[in-house]
Length: 356
Image 1 (cartoon, rainbow, N blue to C red):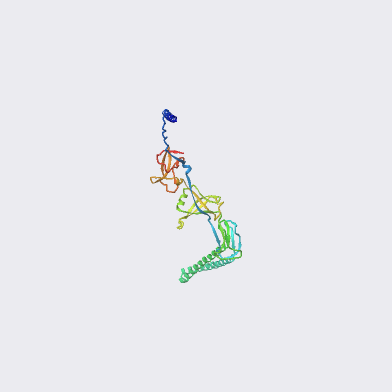
Image 2: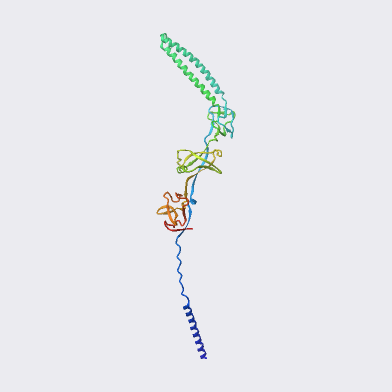
C-alpha cells in the first residue's frame, strides 16, 4: 500500500514538472511584445466663421408722426347781420372763392347812401368856400378887405376839403362792410363743422364754418437732435401707417427745443397726398445709411474693441476705434471678410486656426 502511494506521488511531481517546462518553453518561443507609442493629438484651434456681409445689418429708426393740414380755419363773420343764406354743409368739398354764407347787408347799404349824400353836400360847401377864397384874395390884394376876412375864407376852404376826405372815408367804410356781408372760402377744402343757421343774427367774430384744407397736407414729427442728425444720412424718409407708406422730405425744423422731451418739431412734405388724411397717426421711419455688425460679435483685446478675422489660416484681431460696448459697430472691410463666430474669445492674433 505504501509503495502504491509513493508511486502516485512521484507521478504527480513528474506531471507538475512537465507542465512548468512546457509553459517556459512556450514563453521563450513567443515573439516579444511591441509597446505601442501614443499618436500625437491635433491642438489647432477649431473655429466657425461667417462672412461680414451675412452679419451686417442696417440700423433703422422710427418716431411717432401725424398728418396735419396747412390750414384748418374757423371762418368767422367780420360784421353784424342776419344770415340770409348758407351755401355750405358739413362734408361738402368747397373750392376757393366759393360763397359760404351771405348776411343781410341793408344797414350798410343805407350807410353808404348817407355817406354819398354827405359827400355831395361837402363838395357843394367846398365849391362855395373856393369861390369865397378866390374873391377875398383879389380884394385883399387891392386893400379892400382886412386880413382877417381873407384868413376866415381860407380856413373855410381848408375845412371843406377835410370834410370831403372824412365823407369819402365813411363811404369806403360802408363799402368795406358791404363786401364782408358775403363770406367766401379763402382756400379749397372740406367743411368739417357748421356753426350758423339760416336766419340767425351774427355778431362780429362769430364762427360760421370750419374749413379744412385737404389738398395741402404735411407730416409733423418730434425728433431728438441726434435723430435729426441721423436723418441726413438716410437714403429716404418714409411715413408709414398700416399698409400705407409715403416718401417724405424735411421741409422745416422748428428751432425751439422742447425742454421736457428734448425734441424738435419737424415738418415734412409728402410726395403724394392721395393716401393721406389730416389727423392720421403713423410713424416716421429712416435708416442711418451705414451697415453695422451686432455687438455680440465684438471682442476686447488690449482695452480695444474689435473682431477676430481669419487671414491665411491664422486668427487676426481687427480693432474698431469707434466701437462702443454693447452697441453695433461699423466695419470698413470687404463683405467677403471671414469673421470668427465660434471660439472668437479664445482665438489669438497669429494663432493657426482650422475653420469648420
